[in-house]
Image 1 (cartoon, helix red, strand yellow):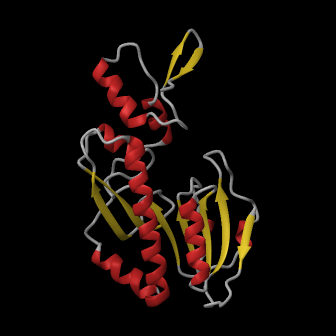
Image 2 (tube, rainbow, N blue to C red):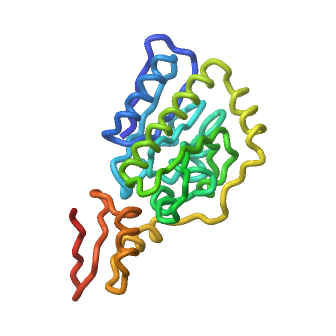
Amino acid sequence: MIIHKEPKVNNGKVILFFCRKKCSYSEQGISLMLSLGYEVFILYNKGKSDKLPDDIGWVQCDYIICFRSWFILPKHIIELPKYYSINLHPGPPNYPGSGCINFSIYNDEKEFGVTTHLMEVKVDSGKIIDYETFPVLKNQSLESVLKTTHQKLFNQLTDLLLNLSSRGNEYIEKNIKKNNSIKWSKVKRTIKQLDEQREIRLDFSENELNKRIRSFHHEDFPLFIKLHNKTFFLKE
C-alpha cells in the first residue's frame, strides 16, 4: 500500500520514498522531507519477500529515493521520476550487492562505508553522488558495524535532502562529476551467496566457525547446520 503525505507548506516537488517498516531512521527521513516542503508517497518494505504493488506507476514524482529498502526496482519504475532515482547503499563502492557488511567483516577490512548513487537496472552500478567511509575495529561485532552503517546512511539521506532543497539538481550534477573517478567493484555478491555463508559445515575449524559467527550470524538471520534432513539454527 502506498501512503501519501502532504506538507504544511508545499515546495512543488514530489518524492516517492521506498523505506523499511519499523525503522526510526525511515520515519525521521519522512519527517524531514515534509518539513522541507516535499509531497511524499511512501512504500514500506517489511521483508525480502515483499512484492511491489502492481499500480505503482500512477505516482507522478520528481524523485525516487530508496532507503534501507529490499525492493529491486524494474526499469519502468526507475524511469518514473521527472529527475532522478536515487539509492542509498549500505556499503562502500568496493562492496556492491548483498551482504556487503558481512563479507567485509569476513575479509577483515579495516574500514567500511555508505554510498548514495543514481539507480540503474543493474543493481549498485549507477553514478555516485556521495560516499563516506569509517574505520572498523579489530573484532568489532556485526551488530556494532550495522549500527554505525545505519547512522551514516541516515546522515547521507539528511545531506541529500538538505542539499536538494537548497541547491536542487545542481548538487547531484556537481557531485557526480566530482566522484566520476570512483568506480563500483565488479565483484557483486548475491543473497544466495550470503545464505550459503550462513551454513555451518562439520569440517569447519574453530577459527573458521568463529569468523562465520562474527561475520554472518544475526538474530534475524542465524547461522544453521543441516543434519539428517533437519535444519538446526544457532542460538547464542
